[in-house]
Amino acid sequence: MTILVVIDSLLVPVTLYATGVSDTSLYVVYFGIIMIAGAAGNLKRAVVLASVMCVAYGAVEFGRLTLLHEEVSEHLGTILLRVPFFLAMTAYYGAMGEFAQQEHIARETHEKQAKEIRRMFSSYVSPRIVEEMIKDPSKATLGGQRKELTMLFADLFGFTSFTEEHSPEEVVAQLNEYLGAMTEVVFQWDGTLDKFVGDAIIVYWGAPLDQPDHVELAVKCALHMQKQLAELQEKWKAEGRVPFKAGIGIHTGDAVVGNIGAEGKKMDYTMIGDHVNLAARVQELTREFGCSLVVSEETAARLKGLIRKEESDDNRGRLGHVSLRKLPPVKVKGKAQPVVVYALEPLAQGEISIVDT
Image (cartoon, rainbow, N blue to C red):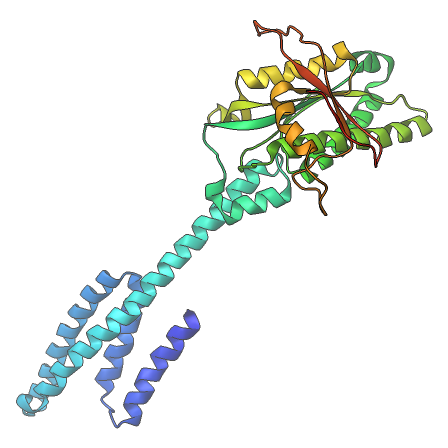
């Protein structure tokens, strides 16, 4: 834009000079108009200021001709013809100035939004999701909104006993190693890391960006977390440390998600609602049934369709080599009726998936 204005502002006077126009006042007024239009940054304001300048130019010209005792009528036509030229140039440069001003404001607004999104979400979601929200901030649901989410709760078995039997330094070091590894997996599967509650990990899919495949992402993330934990367990055993064991629960349902907390003091982008509580209860059932991964009936209903799909090159929209086993209905806190859950277990490569109806 700046280069274009410079070229234009030089091209017009050069053209005028080449055609024999050598009136110094014309060039003074012309460049004055360019400065007015640029400084105004607004088309209407530039035209008003240029109109005042044209009147002043006319008055100065008439005064000059009078002082020089020249015939005003001979120059009147030339002076009057220059006024539309000045106004046209003002409109042109005023429009360019206004466009540049709007472009500058839009750029500043985008940079401000990007900074705010990074500040708010960089600790919750993967860098890829952050960049996607920056490209189109309208995709992010920052205010309170009810959305369908798939929620994952992961908790360690026997962690209280572990903390009693080991030094604080050992507990923190091993816990941080576990949480760091799990967070990498969560971000790999585009999950939103809600929070850590002690040794518990709370994650969800479906916000701040819409994720139509939130069930698939959550379940594949859980299976990946189990695989990553198994590798850590082998590492800890080799180092003579006690390995962690974890139980994961997954549930799909509606929840309110948004910035929640004390305005100006502490705000968290989080989820609340009855289905969030149920997801936590589903995770607790991993202890009762002795399963490392349990999913609710609502999640299982979506999984059945994914499991039955044929294999594809990238396996998107499909889940293979798993066992989805229905467990007995069980009462949970906060629910009058027993809930139905399923144990989800990975099978060896090549084995046919098993699905209970």
